[in-house]
Image (cartoon, rainbow, N blue to C red):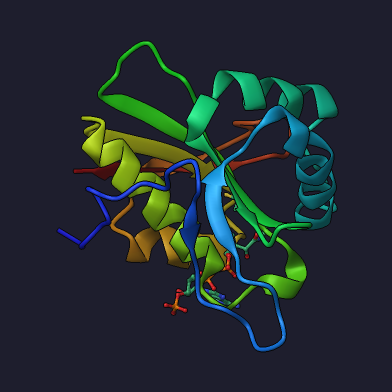
Length: 172
Ligand SMILES: CC(C)(COP(=O)(O)OP(=O)(O)OC[C@H]1O[C@@H](n2cnc3c(N)ncnc32)[C@H](O)[C@@H]1OP(=O)(O)O)[C@@H](O)C(=O)NCCC(=O)NCCS
């Protein structure tokens, strides 16, 4: 089993991440309603080919509760991860992960995932699922390195015509 920060989750004050030279320190903390404009901007930057609609992101900030985490430098959000509310407390879904293009490749995506998975595991979640575009090699490599494994093959048109997805699952 990969080591996860299972007994650690950002408190109201958040956890501090590594500092980039010349940059403000990042903290990972639960998102709030006041983060909506930044989450919308970040999502558009991260998914230029098809960001989530404003109303979806608006509702996630309510529905996900403290399971929507943001990476914040005090003025700007650089990443977020969102986990769905599900009726079965032992199984859930990561519905989105995004890091701002200028911040990629420095461990922030992995850190967001580790914070989230640690929190879920300590909450008693036993299985986490997500979907990813089969062409999204970066995300797939990240998820596989965290222990996610494919559930079956490619799901054709999973998100609508032409939008195939790979379903991955991680069991704790
Ligand atoms: C996927 C994404 C969240 C990764 O965030 P990131 O901060 O760049 O990722 P990290 O720096 O933490 O890297 C995590 C791992 O991803 C893999 N990775 C990162 N960049 C990669 C690249 N260019 N090519 C292949 N693998 C890569 C590596 O395995 C890396 O781990 P390592 O550095 O320990 O080897 C980011 O690229 C992103 O926001 N993409 C657009 C939105 C998206 O596709 N979200 C996922 C939807 S399912």
